[in-house]
Length: 184
Image 1: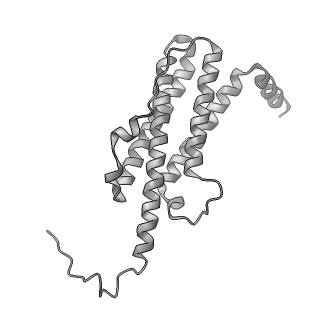
Image 2: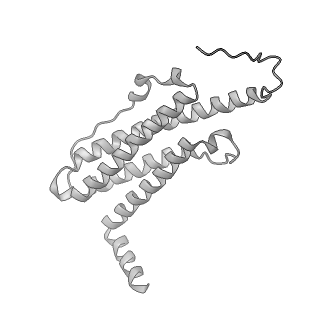
Image 3: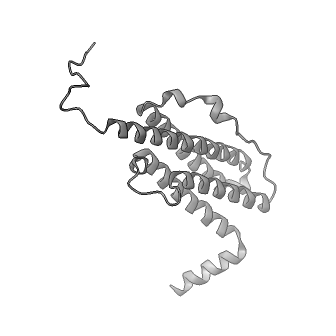
């Protein structure tokens, strides 16, 4: 066992901003915990979406949802590890995160698929609003955390692919996209 011989009270090399670091770390842990809860909800939505699109007519959607589910699963691991690294392991209680788990029935038709895609878009917006609160300063300690950045970037990419899929399913949007592609 290693024992430090430094006296934290009289140590000339001690960082005087440790109190600031503790509050910054606490704010980061709170934000990461919030992101974890929202990412678990999104992961569950993708899990249900995968199950709902298992029929052959929804094969492309099923593949998209499967890929996004695996990415969300990875984000949950990253967030959990980061919270533990920052000393927030006391806040990781499974029951806290599984209270809002939703389950849905099988898809029936394109309207149901569009509704599911819209729900996923809303869930991504919720995660991104948590990761980048409106009016927050970029110099906040949690704003520079790599786990927050990874969650935000992954959700931006997933939101983009979901909104593209939703636009492709709308005949009016599809015609506008094709006309724009022909002009280029």
